[in-house]
Length: 182
Image (cartoon, rainbow, N blue to C red; front, side, top):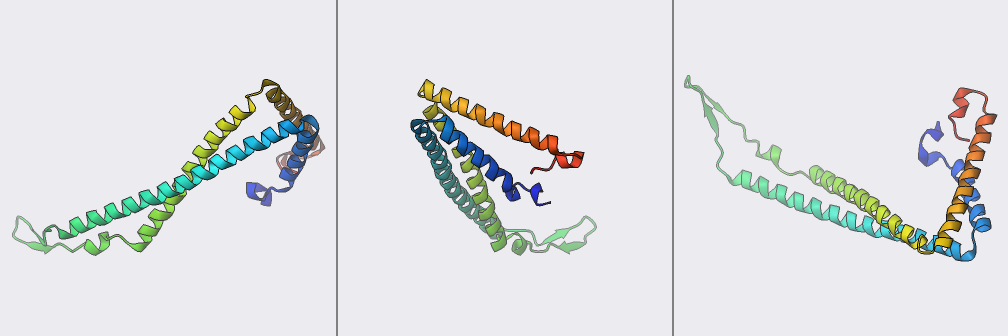
């Protein structure tokens, strides 16, 4: 049951990380490993900076929305509103004052700040991941021989991962066991 959520699937990632480290150590030289570390730092730097910018932008937009909402409410409250409705038959009905129902609340402000912050953080992080990945790809592809060695190491890693998955699937006896990760 705990394997159904990705956050709780830890044992498989440890095996894959160990396998990747073996391939990095055996298939690449120190220059290639340094280049991969530099590319990884570029991705995390771009994602971190863009996440911070996105968070700041989300907070700024939430502040602007809140002040605009407050200005609209103050304008609505200040304008002259009808207090009763007169029907054709001469009957009059009072109109309730809805000003207190339309006023900005602390819960609404908190929700606005939270949702805009999370949205900005998500959008900034994703854009940073995209730009960081593009920058890292340019860094790796500058030298064709290094790029070729890294691609070969990655291909060997994928082959080993697929071999492990195949041997794990061959060892499973039931259909329900096949879909569980070991």
